[in-house]
Every structure is written in structure tokens, then in C-alpha cells.
Length: 303
Ligand SMILES: Cc1cc2nc3c(=O)[nH]c(=O)nc-3n(C[C@H](O)[C@H](O)[C@H](O)COP(=O)(O)O)c2cc1C
Image (cartoon, rainbow, N blue to C red; front, side, top):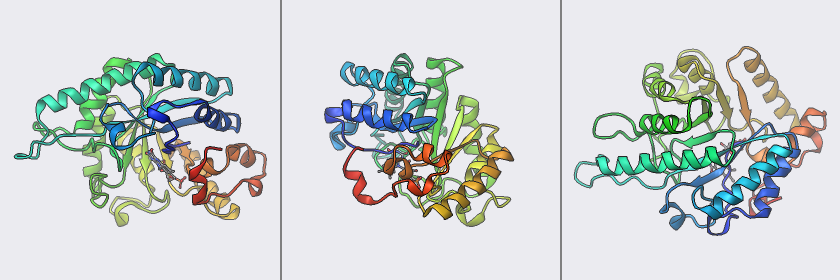
């Protein structure tokens, strides 16, 4: 299950309804839950109230309970973490060193708390609609993301999985491709792997649409390109199970072949999970036709 923001956490603290929502997915057969994105800096919640946070005793205590409940039901759970603000120097456009230091400090503190809370890993959001674009380059020409991953890795040790969520687009504008060739993609992501990323999670609108109009070599989804270029396991996401059951089964057959060929390691299903907590179990037992289909109205409740 990939991150899906739900905005039901009053003042950033997930309540028992949020815990029950995740537990239902764990009981419904999901292997790994990546939580909704949550802030690690104090400024984020000012612009996005009711999005959960991963700092402060109240929120962390609530998350610890959720972690226990999900583990008891047999699934793993990793939080997706957001940082809201980068403050570029208005004259140069680059991020001043003191802001970089503050940002790294915030990520390191969050990494430590998350590992202590018993989560099975952490997903760093590389850049979303409401989050800092970590592919922004600092004064020394290094994208922030590499320094963030390196700092978190140093804090959590070698064995704690760090997932990096990477969008096919630069999320600062949502239009510019992250990279336009294998060489550019490799130049961005290999240093992230070297810095300590365990798994890349490739955010694409549709898993089977070739990135950037087929600019990369071979007719492969972005996730498998990244696997090949970085040597790290990958999660594919985007439109895998949101069509009618027959189309979904076709998608899953295509992806199962990619998993068998070791081109993709994990599949994330977003809206399917939001619509039906037992989607995975229904799929596994040949009852996909019984799964509740997604519609937009489902975003308004936690069920
Ligand atoms: C309600 C909703 C909230 C989302 N919130 C997040 C988020 O917090 N972080 C994130 O990286 N992606 C977020 N996404 C994107 C999903 O993780 C996923 O990439 C997207 O839904 C496509 O997968 P799907 O076709 O299986 O639904 C959200 C999607 C939905 C539907």
C-alpha cells in the first residue's frame, strides 16, 4: 500500500480511527503498508492541518500503537516523511548552508524517532505537491536528496530500510521530467543508492506508460529502468488495479511476468487499497470481482 494522505489526524496525531484503518489493511492481506505522508517539520502542519506528523510525544506514541497493531496483524509498516519548506536565497535562488544544515538535522531526528518507534523502515518523499523538492541542488551542486539519505543512513544504521519515493516529474512544477535520458537518470539516482537508499519507489501516473515519451533505452516501465541503473530493488505504482477486474487481472499478469524476470520487486496499489481494505485477500482467493471499486467519494471517510 503506497502513501495516501487522509487528513484525519487532528493536530497531527493519528487517532484510533486511523489506527483501525491501517490494521484493517494488514488484516486484509497487505504485505507492507507505507503510511500517508506526514510532516517532520513544524511548519508543514500550518499549511496542511490534520495531516499526521512524525515528531512530538503525542504523535509518536499514537504511531507506536499503530505499528503494534499492524505487526500483530502480520504486515510491515513504514512511514512516508515530508518536509514542507526549503528557503532559497531570494538573490541567488540556492539554498543557504544554514537552511541545509537545519533540514538535515530535521531528517536525522525523524529517522531516529521512527526507528525507535518500531517501524520497519522509512520512506523519504523526494518531492510531492505539498513537500520540499529534494532534487533541488544546493550551492555545492549536490542535490539535497543525496545529503538527506546519507545523513539518515548514518543515524539509523545499515540494516534499517530506507525507501526513496521518486516522481517521474520534478514535483516543484509537475511538468519538468526528472531526467531525459538513462545517463541523466543514472547520474541522479546512483549517488542516492550509494548514499544509502535500500529501495526506490517510482511514482508514475500509469505503471505501463513509458517515461518521457520513450526517451529511455528499451520499452520498460520506469521502475525497471531504475532497478537496472541502480541495482536496487524497486516498487512500481500507478494505475495497477483501478480498472475493472478483467483489465486489472491483465495488468497484474503483465507485472507478475516483470517480477519473475526480476525487473520489478514490489507492486503498490493505492486507490484499490483505499476502496477495499481486503483487496489483497480477495485477489489472492480469486474473488476480485467482489472487491469494492474506487470512487472519489471514498476519500471523505476512513473505512
Ligand atoms: C487520496 C490520495 C492521497 C495520496 N497521497 C499521497 C501521499 O501522501 N504521498 C505520496 O507519495 N503519494 C500520494 N498519493 C499517490 C499514491 O501513492 C499513488 O501513487 C497513486 O494513487 C497512484 O496509484 P493507484 O493508481 O494505485 O491509485 C495519493 C493518492 C491518493 C488517491
